[in-house]
Structures are given as C-alpha cells and as structure tokens.
Amino acid sequence: MASAPTAEPMAPLSDAGYGGEPANARQRSGRRRRQIPVGLTIGSVILVFLGLVAVLAPAIARRDPLEQNIAQRLQAPTRENPLGTDRLGRDLLARLLYGARVSLVTGGLVVVIAVAVGLILGVISGYYGGYIDFGIQRTVDVVMAFPGILLAIGIMAFIGQGLANLVVAISIVNIPRVIRVARGGVLQARQMEFVEAARALGASDRVLMFRHIVPTILAPIIVQATFTLVYSIRTESTLNFLGLGVPAPDPSWGGLLDEGKSYIQTAPWLIGAPAGAIALAILSLNLLGDGLRDYLDPRQSGRATMSTL
Amino acid sequence: MNMYIARRLAGLLFVWVAIAIVVFALLRFVPGDPAIILLGSEATPKQLEELRIQLGLTRSVPAQFAEWMTHVLHGDLGTSLLSKRPVVEEILERLPRSLELATLASIISLVIAIPCGVIAAVRRGTIWDQGFLSVALFGICIPSFVLALLLIFLFSVELRWLPLRGYRPWTDGVLVWLRYLTLPALAYGLVQAAELARMTRSAMVEIVELDFVRTARSKGLPERTVVYRHALSNALIPIVTLVGINLGVLLTSTVVIEYIFGIPGVGSLLVDAIRNRDYPVVQGVILGIATLYTLLNLLVDLSYAYLDPRIRYG
Image (cartoon, rainbow over all chains, first blue to last red; front, side, top):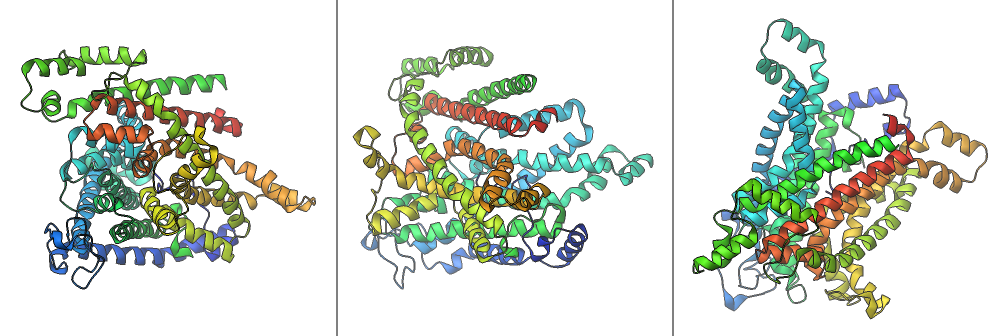
C-alpha cells in the first residue's frame, strides 16, 4: 500500500540530524522525548475535528442525507445546500457529514479488532515459539502474500456488502501487520532481565506475557494502530468507491466519489468535497502516526514528516 | 546462489498452495446457497442443480478442492457464468492492457522520483529538499482514485487536453494510444513517485555520508559521477524493492484506475465480475493477480541477493 510505513529507517531531517555524531543523536532523542512533534498536534486536531463532525452530523446538517428533492437535482452550492446537491437532489453536505461516520466507525472498529487479535496472536507467537510460532507466522505469510486491497476486495465480493462485513474484511487484511510488530517486540523483551527475574519468582506464562512483556511493546503497537487506521480509511474508501462497501443509499466518502464521477463535467462539486475529505483524513492520520512514532518510539523515528519541516 | 534460489522457490510453492486454498475457500463464504443467489428464488430445481455442478458445489469439500486444484494446475480456471468463455481466455485477452498501464505508470514514477530523490538528498536541508518532501507527503496521502478524478477534472474537463475515459489499442496509432493512457498512468505513477522519491532520498542521504563517497569526491571525480555512479548504485536496493512491490500493488491498483477510466483490462474484468456475481471469474482474477504478486516479490528478493551478495549468506 502506498502509505505503508517502510521498514527501512529514514534518515532524520531535523537540524540536529546533519551532524550525524552519536553524541548529537543521543541529545536529539532526549530532546524529542520532551517535545511534542508538530505533526502530532496538527494530526490530532484534525482527527478530533473529524470525530466531532461525525458525532455531531445530525446537528450540523440541515437536511437528511437520504432526503430526495428531484426539483433541486445537481444544483451548484447555495445557501441552503452549502456543497450543492447530487443527482437525486440530496444535500451533499449532509451526505458528507454522515459519510464521515462510515469511515470513522469502520476505522475505529478495525483498529480495535486488528490490535486485539494481532496483539494476542503476536505475543503468543513470539513468547512460545516452536510450532505455535511457525503456524501463526506461516498464516501471516499467506495473508500478506495478497496485495492487501485485493484480499479485501475478494472477501467483500463473496460475503457481500454491509458495514459489519466491511469491518471483517479490512480487519483480516490488517491483523498480520500487528502480529509482526507484536512478535518482534516480544522476541526482544523475552531476553530482558526483568522478564527472567519475574519468571524466577514464579510468574505464570500469562502474567509474564500480558503483565510484564506487553507494556514494553505498547509504543510500537500504538504507532501501528494509527497506521492501521490510515490503511483502514484508505481501504474502506476504495471499497466504497468500487461499490463494495456500505449499500446504497447510505452515504460514504468513497461512494460519494463513485456517484460523483459520472457528473464530473456537469457537477464537479460532487467530486471536490469527498476527495478533500478523504485526503484530509489520511493526511492527518499520517501526521499523527509519524508524530506518535517520533514521540513514543524514538529509535524508529526520523521518517520524513511535516513535524520536521 | 542456487541453494538460495531453491530455498526461496520451495517457500513460494508453499505460499502459492495456501493462496489457492484461500481463493478456493472464498466461494464458501457466500452467505446461503450461491446457486439460489445467482439464479433467484424462481429457478427450477434442475437449473439450480446444473449451476451447482458448474460451480463444483455438489461433492464433499475436499473432493471439490482436489478437482478445482487439478483444473487450476492444468491452466483451467473454470468458465465465466456470464460470457460462457474460459476464465483464462478472458484474463489473457485483457492482461496486455493492464500491463501497458502498469508499465507506463512505473516509468512515470521512476523518471520523476529518482532525480527528485537524489536532488533532495544531495541538497539536504535546502528549500529544494523541503519542497520535494512536502509535495511527496501530500502525494502519499492521496489515494490514486482521488488523484485520478482530480486529474480528469483538470486535464479533460477544464483544459480539454486529454480524453475523459476510454482506451484505444496502439494499433490505432501510438499517439492515440498514449493520449488515452496518459491520465490513468499519471494518476498511478504520481502516487508511486511520491513514495519512491522519499525512499530514494533516505537511501541516498545515508550513503552520501559514507567514507567511500568522500574518497571518490576527494580523488577529484566530477560530482555527477560521484552521485550517480558511486552513491546511487549503492542506494539501489531499497529502491528496487519498492519498485518491485509497487509493480505488484500496481496490478491491484489498476482495478480502481481501470474502473475509473473504463479501460478494458483485468481490473475492470474483476469489477464487472463482482457486480455480476460471476464467481469463477472473480476467483480466477484474484488467483492470477496474487500469483503474479508473489512471483514479483520473489524476483525482488532474488535481485536483492544479486545486488548485494552479503544477503545470500545472511
């Protein structure tokens, strides 16, 4: 996927990065810990804004997103319909606001499911090793052998449209990445002395895994969760664009673009607003993810971000 | 090297069989009886039975899989429910158009990204660098279908330079062919270029600092030779990976791009098949793209080992 966080660590861009001296680097990571990256702030503000828009949609929208008014079809933006109307005279603003709900609800549920399942499987895989690890990792290989979006398309093609199905399909695609991150963290943490000490004190496997090891790998997991939200919104809007998401007439950003594309010559406003919404959501989440990584996980930090510009 | 290739091929075989199982299993996820969904509730029992036989749903699941797999290994992906033609034939007929699109998009992304990435890395910290990075960040955030619609609006609707949608084969004239393919290729190439430029930049930034580059410079080689011959050739590994992976992703993204631009390639075959519930075609296309994607990943890994001999022994 185009926005995949790359495994290759990117060189730091901040002013301190130019020297490249180890002492400098240490100072820098020390300073970063205290300073909240600009991207993190901008990203969270936009995300909170989108969240508010989704929650308050009924209050902000003056019309019902499904209410048709054929007499007013394909109207350019007016006072009454600030973003114009679609082919059935429905208010685009209302549809856009309610569409935010689909993106955010899908994204939120996918993050919860993918992180919960991925974390548990990843920790078990890394902690026990052996056959369990082999089995889980080969399954991960298989899922990741599909280009992510294709697998989601395939699953949706067979299980059919609907919000719940959308969440299931996108979760399946995202779980393996969380498993990889969690397993990698556990393999490192397992070697640490405090884990040895806890084991020597007689802690059970479950206590060791979830009380002692999991807290040490939370930072990369939180970062991964943010990027899962990015992938999820991207995939969700693509699936809706292809007509494989929530069924009509319910609005979604991808679906609005799909409807609008036939009227690109006569009613281009139908494209602009949903395109902007999708780009804004993904941009803010990318900033948030990069910023969180710089803040929580300085070892992985330094990927090119707005925060360093 | 041969051992390495053999090991990788064995791994590939395992993954491919598993992919095939997943694709086979997809049809079993259809809620209810696929035959009833396809024919409607008014179909006669005889019609339903015939369709179930055609979809291979009449026997036990392992027997179904064995039969399906045998057919697949003989290059038979079943018959389209809609056109009644073999799925393989449909795919092969449309594949060249998708490959044209993917190739053109890759060329566009390489031509834009590598010079931009190199310039940004060499002039790190300057306005050039920051400009490229901002544009690239923006490029990464825009899904290709959103960019495609914006490009259509700009170049087809407002400026009227390029056709809105459609496809013409190159036998109609290379210029005509290019006119129709430019926007779709641009829509995808630009998004890829953004990521590739960031990757090129970061790989170059690390290498430009290394001793051998300083040596090359201090022995008086021209800057161009230092940058392109010495530094860039060593930065190629991450770049090759990304280009390879992108080609695989491109195959999928053509689904969306072909759908927007009405290009009769494999992608629009998939979208049409999904809309018509032509399950054998959907399975065939997904298996085909996933197979190509795995092969591409293998090629990328092998080119790794070729570009950097240390990897083979790692």
